[in-house]
Amino acid sequence: MNPFLAVSLFVNFRSVVHALSDSLDLVGINDVHHGKRVGIMAVEIVRLLGWRGDDLDLVLDAGLLHDIGVSSSDLHHQLVEEFDWEGSQGHAEFGAYLLSQFPPLAQLAAPIRLHHTHWSEMKGRYGRTELFGNLLFLSDRIDVLAAVAMLKNELLEQVPAIREKIASQAGEMFDPDLVKAFLEVSRKDAFWLMLEADPVRDYMEKISRNARPAETSLETLHGVASLFSHVVDAKSRFTVEHSEGVARVARYLCTALKQGLDLGDEDCAKLELAGYLHDLGKLRVPDAILDKPGPLDERERRQIASHAYETYRILTRIQGFEEIARWAAFHHEIPNGEGYPFRLQGEEIPLPARVLRASDIFQALSQDRPYRAALPAKVVLEHMKQLTESGQLDRIIYDIIAANLQEIYRLARPGSE
Image 1 (spheres, rainbow, N blue to C red):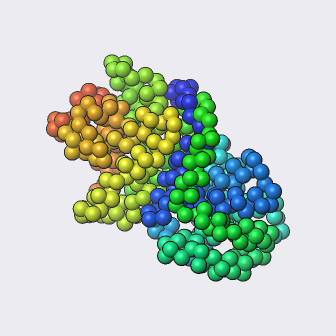
Image 2: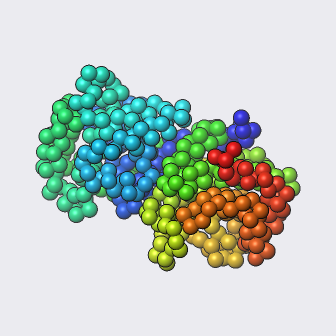
Image 3: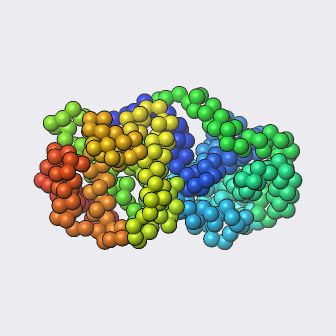
């Protein structure tokens, strides 16, 4: 067991999950509230059926996380452009697998696995889990129809057509009792108006205000950070296990540095979390840009550069993650002020953020990319040396890398062990 994980932070675990779920909605690029709308609608539907308390919390969280198996913007477009698509089951299976590996959220795996399964296929084995999964399917498909109408500013005008479309699938795609509840609750204009951006934000902010921080182990936070890092890294075949490699290298470097500098076990544990989460914002970058085999143009570079700020925006929502948010978001800042997104200079960049930057560069050089193969350890070290000599990396960090090159190279490439 990682010795750093005995440390705890005073945060609300559910607030962490809600904030990190923002990254899933980034995959929509221009529509960033899909998961929230699905969760809110699902809650309103089963509230009419008498569900209360913790059950409603579970439904909301499942809605927020139902697309945790989707990191590809191309796949997301397919899912929202077609009302019923045979290829949709893959992401449901992957999302369920990810959640099943993390005990605090494992109870959501089974319904999320079913969130594209037709009711007619489950009639012979229909219980609470199947109902839960079909509720997510119903709410998800309602939102696909509603989102198109909202983009055209025609939501209320399209309500009759949406209700008719859903009603036509009662007994086939959807549980007739759930459809009946939906048709009842959606008679009110308020049901549809709450799907607009401002009401959705208000809904989530109210939950956040009522969430009380509590001592949460870094083992649990490590698990949820690792979970979301897998979503980010699955976006491109060239970044598989990138975040894990960055986290491992950052933790190693921090451990070596703490003996001579003002860094402790908690700092190293938090830096490891920042390593797992540093690229959350990349989920908003189109697949074609991340996988482009040649140089990026200026517009594409700006889109890539925006990911660090998106990461900052998500992590700063979590009370107790203030340092983690800064360290993660600053991993492209350079002492000369030419980095992004804040153009910090010199000592404005905290040492842990500088460690994370070195770890990110080292891991990226050690991994295949669309435009080149992974570089050998000695070549990676030469690149790090050049950056150090130009003032872009700290000499003390470089010296640790040089003295422990093979071990750090191994840590940077988790799949190579």
